[in-house]
Image 1: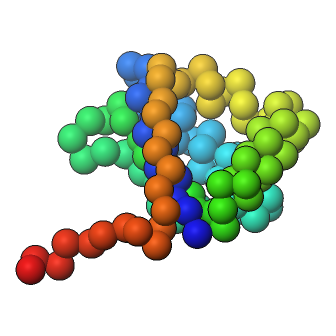
Image 2 (image 1 turned 90 degrees about the vertical axis):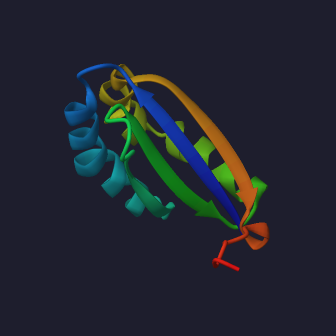
Image 3 (image 1 turned 120 degrees about the horizontal axis):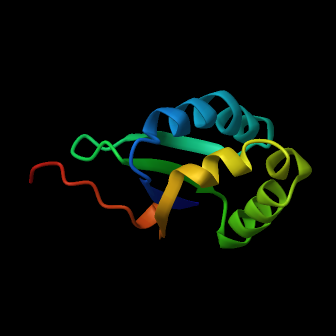
Length: 106
């Protein structure tokens, strides 16, 4: 398994619109497309930063899933424009879920 961590830096004053489109359109679409969303939400220290964490079986599965999802008519003629208009930049990190280390205070 792999985990993808995506951080979006939103344009100023677009957080409300982004969240509305994400939760009402993008997230339900990801659910229909069987995309495993692990977590999402705004940063506690930056109201214009939003994270999306997804998991996949492998790098190849991630590529195939995202190619299909982001290349679909449902995305292109659906929430894509509204979402992209809110995003200034984004960064993606992909890690091996088996290698994640959790500090348990020891």
